[in-house]
Image (cartoon, rainbow, N blue to C red; front, side, top):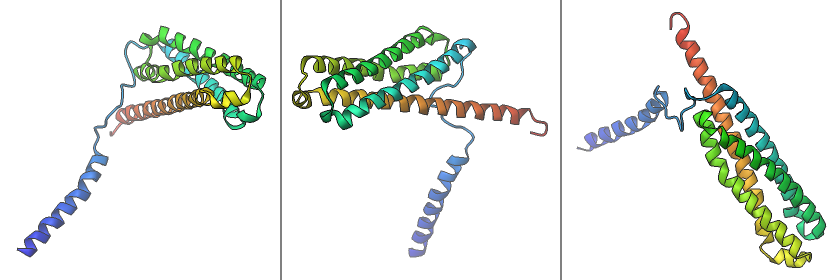
Length: 196
């Protein structure tokens, strides 16, 4: 009886170790979203890639402007706060223009690009709202102490976080899509080689 129980446990352990290996070696895999579409327009796809890259660069600039306000905010005068927020606002407006252009061509893009637009839109909206709120507070209260005790620090934190999340999302999804496209190209090449 004890021997049968040990054999059963041994078999279950062996199966538990083998099953994950089988899952790793399986040829079927899960795609988070389709990579290509027959309705995608090559020119728009390339233009969208360029817009995503620009939006990512602008988000990094916003993060730098706002990051200084987070770290040194209590030592900086209200004019410095206002100037940095103004520069961030200009970059955020440029991001909004790029997002508008992406939405205009959305139906002619690859599915992964359409998904990326959906993922970054809330971050852009949040940056716009929080930057406007922060600018309104700076303009209404020139006193650093009053600013520090108001909602202002949370506003700039939200702008920073939204810019960071948007930048990370663009980078991650774009890198994933490019890796998937390379894999597809290699798989096609592998299938077309003689002897395959």
